[in-house]
Amino acid sequence: MSAAVIKYDHDMVRWQPDSRGRLEQAAMELFTERGFEQTTAAQIAERAGLTERTFFRHFADKREMLFDGSPRLQQLFVDAVAGAPADASPFEAVTAGLDAVSAFFVDLDHSRGRQAIIDSDASLQERELIKMSRLSSVIAGALRERGVTEPAASVLGQAAIGVFHVAFGQWVAPGNTRGYAELMHESLAELRAITA
Amino acid sequence: MSAAVIKYDHDMVRWQPDSRGRLEQAAMELFTERGFEQTTAAQIAERAGLTERTFFRHFADKREMLFDGSPRLQQLFVDAVAGAPADASPFEAVTAGLDAVSAFFVDLDHSRGRQAIIDSDASLQERELIKMSRLSSVIAGALRERGVTEPAASVLGQAAIGVFHVAFGQWVAPGNTRGYAELMHESLAELRAITA
DNA sequence: TCGAGTGATGTCAGTTGCTGACATCACTCA
DNA sequence: TGAGTGATGTCAGCAACTGACATCACTCGA
Image 1 (tube, protein in one colour):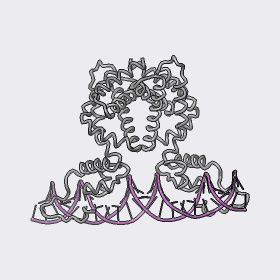
Image 2 (tube, chains in turn yellow, orange, red, blue):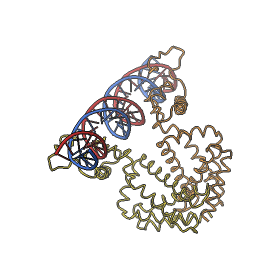
Image 3 (cartoon, protein in one colour):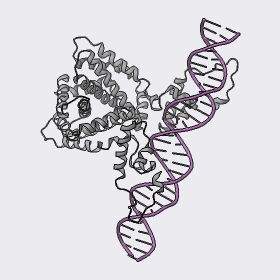
Image 4 (spheres, protein in one colour):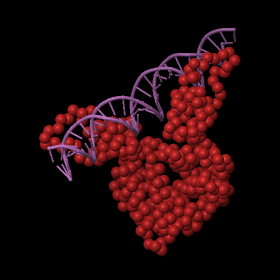
C-alpha cells in the first residue's frame, strides 16, 4: 500500500535492490512472529515494500520460500555421488553424497528455526517430502550413471534419503549436541546392520 | 443448484444414501474426464447431487478423496509387523508387513487409474508422500514395540516404504505383468544386497 | 542525443479452495 | 407428542493464486 504513494526523487533508484532477499527475510520474520498459516502473502510483500502480485512472481507459492536452498543441496549430493572413485561401490558412492551435504548444515540455530516452522504446518511437511523425493530420484539417476541397475538404484536412493531424514531430524532435535556427520554415520551403520 | 428446487414427496427419503460414496464416484469420473486440477469441488458436489459445503464436510480437502484407503493400508501393515513371530528379526517383521499389504493391490486397472491421476498433479504427489511418511512413522513405532531401538527403527521404517514405493511404482508401470509381491521381494533383495 | 525496446514492478479483476455461522427439517425417542 | 439430533443447505467471506494490461527508469543502438 505504502509503495503506491512513493514519489521518486531524482536521486532515488526506481526499485530497492534484492526484492527476493527482502521477501525472504520479511517472511522468516513474520513466520516466526505469528506463524506460517497466520501470515498472508500480502503481509510479507508489504513488509518487503512490494506488492502481493510481485511476491508471486518471485515464488511459485507461499511454501516455496522455505526451500530456496534445495537445488544447491541436491547439486552437492549428486556431484559427490558422481564424483566418487570409479571403483567405489554404490553404497560407498551414496555415503559420499551423505557426507558431502554436511557442508550444508553448519548453522544449527538457523536450521532449527526453519524446521520449527515446517513442523508447524502440514502443507510445509508435504513440500519438504516432495523435495526429498526429488532428491531421491536424482540420486538414483546419478547411481544409474555409475552403472547401477534398477531397481537397485531407486531403492538405494530411497534408503539414502531415509538415512538423511532420520539423521537430520536427530540433529535439529532439541537438546542434541552431536554433529550431523556423526549422527548420519550412525544411522547408516544401523541400516547396514539391520538389513544384513 | 438443482438440489435447491427439489420438493420432497411423501414417499421420498430426505437424502439419498451414501453421500460420501457418491462424492467419491463423481470425483473419480470427473478427474479422469477432465483432470484433477480442472475439476472444481462444486462440480463434484453437483454431480453427486450435493452442495460444495457438504463436500467439505466429508473430505478435509479435494486431495484427500484419493487417499481414502490409506488408514486401512496402514493398519494392515502395522498389524503384520506387530503380529510377526516373537523371534523374527526386525527385517523379517518388516518383510511380513510388506507382504501383508499385497492383499491391498489386486485390481491393477483401478490402481493404475488412480496413480495416473496422482501422477498428473504435484499437490497430489505431495499428499501421497505424506501418507507414505506417516506410514513409515507408524512402522517405526511398531518396531519399537518389538524392542528395536532408535535410530534403527526409523531407518528401517524409511527403508521399508522406500522398497514399497519402488515396487508399487513398478507394479503400476505400463506394460508390467509381474505381481506386486514378486517385485517387492526383488527390491527387498536389492536393498539387502547393496547395503551389505 | 534520441527513440525503441526491456524488465521489474504495480493495478485490477477474477477463480478456486476452504471456513464459520446459522437455518432447515425428516427422523428418533423418551 | 414434543424436544432433540444430525445431515444437509445457504450465505458471506478470506486467502491463495492467475491473467491481462499499464508504468516507467534504464539501456542501447542509430
